[in-house]
Image (cartoon, rainbow, N blue to C red; front, side, top):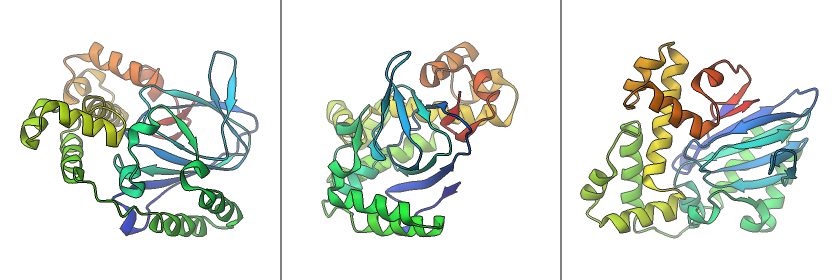
Length: 265
């Protein structure tokens, strides 16, 4: 279930996702990057992260995950209830004045970031009986957490992100640099610092998700490869597999999706 945040938060939070899993036993799920960071509340059950072929690491009940440059495999226990806050690319920077780079490929316990308020919001959500109440708790929590820090590069970054998304990832970063008026080094540094990945990596992620959208709606992988900006089908498949660990056909044949970038293996 996907729900929108309060209108005042939509520049910071993309949406909320409630996953109420009725699994009869533990299953492995794959998460791959969609260009956004997120906050996870595991209200029932447990989540573990695969760290080797046979070993899993237990994750806390509430945590923030940063941008990831590779896919993650997670073991979710039976009858789990998970609430995910999907942040906008600049969400953590705008909300808290914290650089996204600090969390790249990293998971942080929520109370380390928010202090005791992190524990309190988890308890409030856990006690809520209805999803509408959970969302009210989250909206109030984030509205009260808004940073008063003004980022001097915010307009540049918002514009750059919008350009990349508008062009579905098919855009020359050099053109963004020229229009921005900054040096290439400064542009790359600011983008990486605030968002957590480079502009090229972000553009490639948006491009792959547009390709994913195309192949989900039609059956022709060849024409969709060109439409998404790849030189040919092999390049599209290679990029997709590097990003997700799956071929496009493997992804399409998997009906067990909890979100576009989160599916059962």
